[in-house]
Amino acid sequence: MRTLRELSQSEIEVIQKRVEELRQNGLSYREISEQIGREFNLRISKATVLRWCKGTNNTFNKTKKVLLSPSPELAYIVGAYFGDASATEGSNYRYKVKLKVIDREFAEAFARALSRIGLNPRMGFENDRTRTGRWYVEVTSKGLFRFLTGPREGLFEVAKAYPREFLRGFFDSEGSVVVSKGRVKVLASNYDIEVLRLCQNLLEVLGIHSKIYKTKHKGQPVVIRGKQYRYNSDLFTLTINRKESVYRYTREVGFSIPRKQNKLLSYFGLL
Image (cartoon, rainbow, N blue to C red; front, side):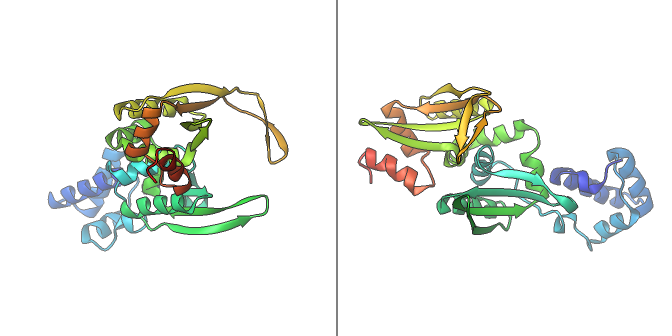
């Protein structure tokens, strides 16, 4: 049988509501515990049922309740998760979502989004002798962890509901601006072709034309900080290079990172 630790926030909410219904129907705490066990294949003690019914214990005091319905902020978080952000399960059932980047403004935007869905992120700066110092944002949340690592359909639904915010989170992570020989283009590279196709579709909805190319092949050598490695997977790049589409991207999506956004604004004389 499952335990409460294994459940998502939404599952716990359903079970708590069912416990209340059973209590209102006159079942004892022991009977409720047994009934919940049968209905949900869940091991739940009589003591936990009692505390829930009396309101002296709320599971979400331990599992922080977050707003996981589609919203601009959640879409931004999902976009960043498909890029630089990570979700990991550590020891003692600690579920962490973290972002490490060189741009403070990106870290601040990610932290704001986390705050607006009900979390309390921590932000700081860490030096690293082997690479450029980076800003980090981290939060411990079982609910958000379960959502981000759960079925992709849920993440894609959020992206489709708020395409601008999702795309901004993704391009803040993976995007770059190239100005050369009087021309400008926006690029975003990722190993996940499915995510890039989602981005391409969402850009198309906004009237922004883009193409996807395979830019690195699995097994191809690459040198990183003086050491040679090989790509473990194919790398794909989404490219926006039509001037009118880059302009529309600048106005409709843009970057939270000034050094990237200002490059676009300057090119189009908007700065």
